[in-house]
Length: 323
Image (cartoon, rainbow, N blue to C red; front, top):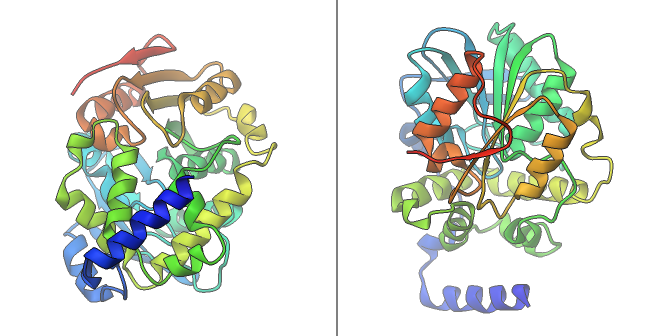
C-alpha cells in the first residue's frame, strides 16, 4: 500500500513540476565546492578517495561522523558550541557530501568504512580522540571503537544503527531493483524534503535552506549511485541477527543520546544498546527525532561536553529537554 501510494504521488509530481526539482543530472563539483566549503574545509586523499573534512577549534580532539544521506554540515550547531574547547574534526563519509563515492565499490561494508576512517586519522596525525556518530555514522563509530580501542577515549552514539530493524521506508524503496537504478538518474527534491521531515520530531524546524543543502549534495557527481549502494548495503544487513553481537565487547566509556520521536532508529534499538552497555550513560530528548544534533544543537552539545569532561550526564535512563 505504501509503495502504491508513493508511485501515485510520484507520477502526479512528474506531471505538475518541472525538471529542476527532479534532481536530474548532476551539479558541477566546482559549484558545490564553492557553496559548501569554508575556511576550515580541507581535502585529504585516502586511497582512491579525496575526503572532504573540516578542522576547527583547539583542545582535545572530537571526531564527528554524520548519518546516511547527510553530510558534515549536520554538525554545524555542535561545532559552534564546542570549538572553543575542542578540536572538532568532521568528515563527509564515502558516497556522501563533497567526498563522493568510491568508483570501485558496489557495497559499502562496515570493514571498508572503518578502514577508511582509520587511514584518514593516520593521514592527519590524530592519535587519540573522542568519537561521536549519528545513525550510519554511529554504526561506524562503535565498530571503529572496537577496531581501535587504543585510539578512542570516549564514544557518543546518537540514534545509532547497530541491531536488526526495519529500514526507513524511503531507503528500503530506493534500494529495490529498478527503483534503485531510477534513483541513480534522478533524486527529486520532494523526496529529500520528505525524508528530512520524517527524520525531525518538530517539522517546523525544517527550513527551505536545509532541504536545499541536502538536495544539492545528493547531486554531486556519483552520489546518487553511491547512496543507492549504501542503502542496499544497509538493507542487506538490516535483518542480520548477528549485527549487534559485538556491542557488548565495547569497553570505551559511552554516552547514548536519542530522540524519543525517532521513527528511523527507534528507542527499542537504544534499549538494546543500553542492555549490552550497562555502564553507558543515556539521555533521551522529548519531541525530538532522528538527529538531535540538528534539532536540539545547544542542549545536545552541552550534554556531550559534560560527558567528555568526565561528569555524569544524567541518571540512566532519563528524558532530558532543553534548547
